[in-house]
Image (cartoon, rainbow, N blue to C red; front, side, top):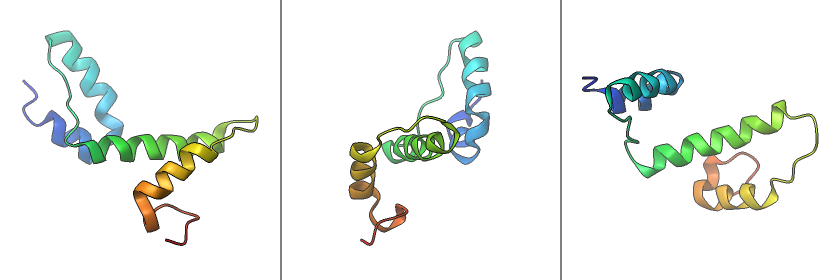
Length: 79
């Protein structure tokens, strides 16, 4: 049952919710391939959330942590 669900969810993040709901009906889970994949998804969610929100949000603490973790790959840092 969904033998490659973790790899599919990693390669195509947009299908993760579909896989999770399908797995919920048969009693399986969609695991994260590794912690870096989970961190990347969290980083992208926070980065994109600021674009859609109308009121100002203070992301300084979170952005500082992501800049430390992701280094030069994080936009707006000169590391």
